[in-house]
Amino acid sequence: MTETKKSEWNSNITFVMAMIGSAVGLGNIWRFPNVLYSNGGGSFMIPYIISLFLLGISFVLVEYAVGFKFKKSLAQILYFIKEKLEPVAWFVLLIVFLITTYYVCVVGWDLIYVVLSLTKAWGSNPDVYFSSNVLQATDTIAGITTIVPTVLASIFVIWFLLWFILKRDLNEGIGNVSKILLPILCAIVVIIVAFSLTLPGASIGYTQIFTPDWSALTNLNVWLAAFGQIVFSLSLGMAIALTYASYLPSGSKLVDNAVVVAFSNSGFEIFNSIGIFSILGFMAMSTGIPFNKLVTEGTGLAFVVFPQVFNIMGPWASLIGPLFFLCILFAGLTSAMALLEGVCYSVSEKFLIERKKTATIVCIIGFLISTIFATGAGSLILGVFDAFLNNFALLFAILIECIIFGWIYKFDELIKTLNDNSRIKVGKTWKAVIKYILPICILGLWIQGVYSTITTADSSSLTIMAILSVILIVVPIVFAKLPARNKNFFNPEN
Ligand code: PFF
Image (cartoon, rainbow, N blue to C red; front, top):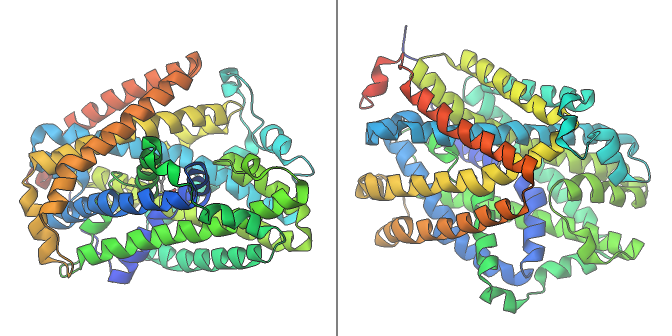
């Protein structure tokens, strides 16, 4: 068996585009506006920007430094740091993989809406249409036995596209797709925002973002929300930045790149929310529904409120509607491929399976798991997966990563790697952030997440969470125990 060839980005621009593509996702488009609105509007920018610099960029830098220094997959890096840590890598990767299985499903719903928006096929009741016609959702878990063919087909299409991108060489696949989709995505957002500002009532919406509620700043939950948004939006701890940085050629500028990526991601979500709020302002004025009833998170905003807006927008809706859903589709695709790349890389490196074959195996298994979400109980189970994996498992994984890189590994080596490869230098402050401040903030977020997840869960949700917990313990241990086919796996110096 021969060594799998180590991939490398063909230019810094490709890397930066792929990194921005990985960060800009569904979270930027539908999560951010709600978080911003519910946490004090304009004043939220203060905790948000502080979280971005202090915690977000700081942790991205850890991932860059580790990936760039070792130029290996997460599984092999953790094995090298301490043999016993290998299961932690598979734990992180399994969480990321499971998140992708439902993330793909939401991108699949969006694909359906790209088509529906051409004729506004959702009719005069988009909320009923979404749950009854598109999802064919049942109230109980019993719906798991009925497959919803359209959702299944769209999930299949998304997995197929991901497979088609991932099986290719790094630059040809992820690189080119990011370089094509990202500019289109930005152009679409510019069109939507420019158009939305011309709508009557737009100012009712966007002034909400810029009207600060200073009292929110004394609320700890607002700070946790800001930090939570940064974690989600920058896809922290999901081994994406680490994997992408491991493909960087020597001589790359690490800190400089991290700053560009983080600023672009936040710039995108702030700019985009101006458009979303303006459109909601128009809706509030046209229908008399109070503004605060319109701002909802996730599926509610994208697949219910927006179709309602397009219904009253007139002829422009035939252009803005499909563009809006295409924007979500492109953002979702570039994020989903990034989520999978780290998983594929570790599998391919340990078991010495070539890129194409790894992508095929991972995408088939992913698709099979995603079929759960294409059932009548799909959206119900999806909600449980999302709450459990994001609020509970992922935050726990990031906490362990902080401890491993901040405390177990020689942290000064990471400082050296960054300073040797950047114009902007880092030092003691960064070290203190990673060792003390970041773990404390993550712990706060984690306790809040666990509390809200457990107190709101019913018995079937708790059962699903219990099953997920067992899977998250057993599978990583099995993967770490499986013998590596790559003889260099146990010797990362090579
Ligand atoms: N950062 C991306 C987004 O905002 O959608 C990707 C992502 C983050 C996907 C977190 C999934 C997730 F749980």
